[in-house]
View (cartoon, rainbow, N blue to C red):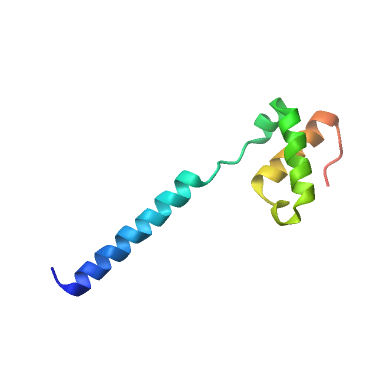
Length: 77
């Protein structure tokens, strides 16, 4: 195999490894329905999001907030 082919193959393998690593370690976001059924967790997540503004717009934070709004009849923003 040529040197350039080996480098290209190594790059592809590395890219696939990084993708698999990200996919397997990424925590899947919970749905609004899940948070509605698990209000205590939604409250905890909401407090975590409030304390850390950098994650406030994440799907988990938005879903937890929406579940709390639905469950307690709070108006949406």
